[in-house]
Length: 69
Image 1 (spheres, rainbow, N blue to C red):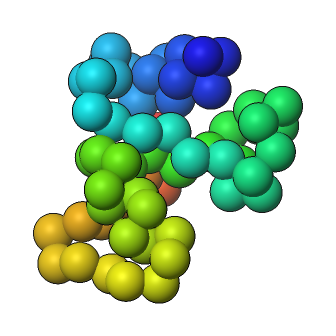
Image 2: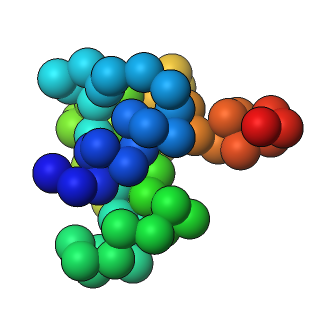
């Protein structure tokens, strides 16, 4: 659950129950911020991971990375 705490702190709000934090390198022990992506739900995450992009299923972190902190 450390990855969820790190993402919540970075985003500045508590994550919803449906939001998924994905480890880019698939190493659950690597909780470095650049290795974490936030997805709105597990379905969106799994569809993207298996190469089936769905309209409206975008990782919120992508646009958040563009905003200066």
